[in-house]
Image (tube, rainbow, N blue to C red):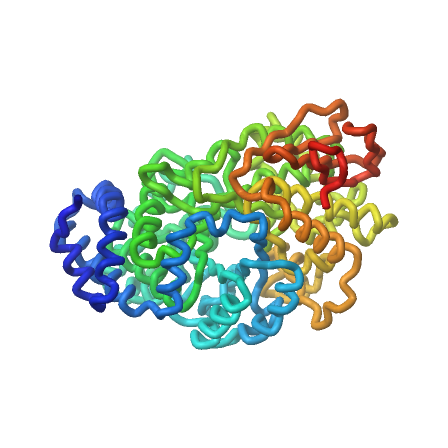
Length: 589
């Protein structure tokens, strides 16, 4: 039995009496992990005990402010911790302005989402962005205000409530690695506030910068080379991994951790159910390394997860870690110290596209074989496209050499064959909508539709929480008008961010095919997250045979020719996928 210490009392004192028993139970279960992880990060610093007590007291105040409907949701999800692992879960990702113009317009799109079967809506950054260039909203200037173009915090709360009433969760980005250079923290640091200066990494000497740069990679080598930006007001070089206007945060500073944790809990109280933790791999800096996937980054995430488990257990954390397959499992944590509930399976997505280009399912089989079983109460996020580029280099461990992936990139970026993609950041990355990359505007649109459905069938069948990207269900194609906007022309990711059409009544064969697959998935428990998945041996390299549980068999033909496949001598058309009952060999119904 854990004894309630003074920090516990500080937390409980902030709560109404009716919540004491619930919070005491959560503290007994989770506080030991939280205390140990934070002591590991910050225990060597003076004043640690007082800082920890203040952290818990602030969390208590935020629990006390949590609306009754969200407290009830917390309780229900605590009782069913795998609620998001069911085969009926389906995600959808969209930009607010491109999808519905503003938050109220997104609410008006709920019938479209409900018709698809969506239960989880990820809205890409909608908080107040940096003035001017903002990396599509990922340079956040405030955690407590909505972008005025999109609405208000009241609109956000109304949307969250409407989504809950329709059985949908709301996911928001929480950009962990950086804030905009006009965020109040950065403005205060520039004004001479030493406390806020400590929220950032500022190197006074160029030699220090050069020492780090020798082992660092570059995220945007064309648009934003290097990892540091000189700021005369700060008197040194500010760490800026992504763009010069995005200042990396210093998680070696406990005050910064507390500020980010409080921002997360305040947004959770507005009705956000899921946080996509952006750029998680970059959170900790260590000389002589690439400053990615450092052990302390995982410790930070484990501490955030445990604080959420105490203060808002109805909330999920999702790791946006675009890393090789072998590095993905760490983002779920361990049984003793859970980390994120969800993690993007980016290599599965990339391997699917590579299989289309090579007309060989070998890379998908390698990714499936290399994917470990999920820990309890966790799920992969599987997807075909997203707002970001397809980065081919993360598939190098399975591909064996970069030359093979360069050939795949050239297939999509060079306009060879059916693909209509746009090169990004030196060519080892590709942009484009699913329909364009599958060749919808080429001579054989029926084959393109089958390719689109093939890739989505893989994401739906693999095992996890599948995500659809805005417009892919309608077969939306690339929009090159971004080239006419000087603020966007340098970033080809805007090619897949076209405005969603006002009228979706004439939805077409991709929409119909996706609705059929989604309805089929909903009926089969073997397709839930966590059910074992295996790639079976096949006689044809273009054929992927995916077995799930005891009854499901998915057959995927990644080639332009017909392929014979057991059972029953079935022949798959070019680019075709079928889902079968393993016991009967007949199509699932």
